[in-house]
Length: 203
Image (cartoon, rainbow, N blue to C red):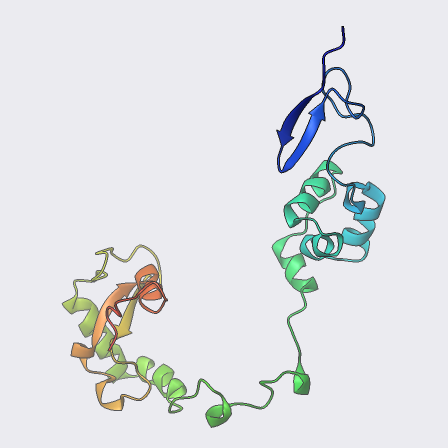
């Protein structure tokens, strides 16, 4: 006696196990898998798009209506080598250039992020005697530790001097040690992120 088909759920699809689409063991018959067929499953087509044309997995996935993970799976399945990071960057479209870029020619006061033009002065200041003395004083006062997480210097450029009132727009406070604290790189990034809801270490 043949067992009656039973409904099963696979992913988001409801199927009848034991019906005309499956074998007695419950396996799908060739060409009748519940997932729709995509060109990315075809080795020759995928190799041509990814290798010959230099398209990204994400671009291929968007065209076919699949996830990038699905395309990456079939690249591996077909033993098609993935690109290195440097190769991927070389192929990446980085946006409009020249006059086609809406920010073209917008430097200085024309740039929406412009404050007072003091950035070059800041870089010069840190390599001069006053700037170096300021940095040393802040690090020494804070015990050469991040005042937030208490981590010490574990590699170059790990500790930063953070201005509570920003450098730009506050000329009188730029080398005032009361306006500066020592932060490690991760904590400094956190202070300037949206995660710092309370505005800690900011004026």
